[in-house]
Length: 150
Image 1 (spheres, rainbow, N blue to C red):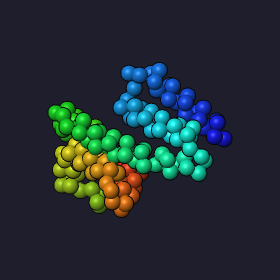
Image 2: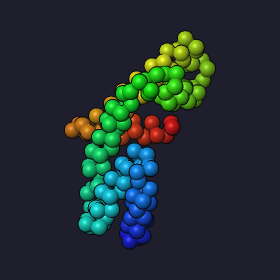
Image 3: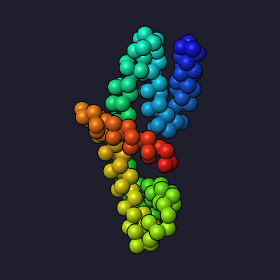
């Protein structure tokens, strides 16, 4: 029911707020999107809740992905020997058959992984922020693929 959903959202917002500042950046953004949805749930008719929330959440997520890419522009993340970007790309490459992952390809891919991660997050964010509907859809699809692969 609408009331139960609203109460659950309010409880989640309260949980992250109580845990702050010891929360991940993604938890802060989750609170922003949850507050947006809860506001829409309280202020809009049933048929308008998603419509009232969708564009705002899309813009917030676009800003989040661009910012996430920007925040990775530091010496620790850019060092492929210690970067979680390299681990992320290695985990994606592990899904591919050995014929598609020869050593001559894997080594440079892992070395470039931090930059590929930054570029991917920023491109995803720009797509979500775009005024072009196909670009926004591509951003939504790309975010789904990235999070499924994680």
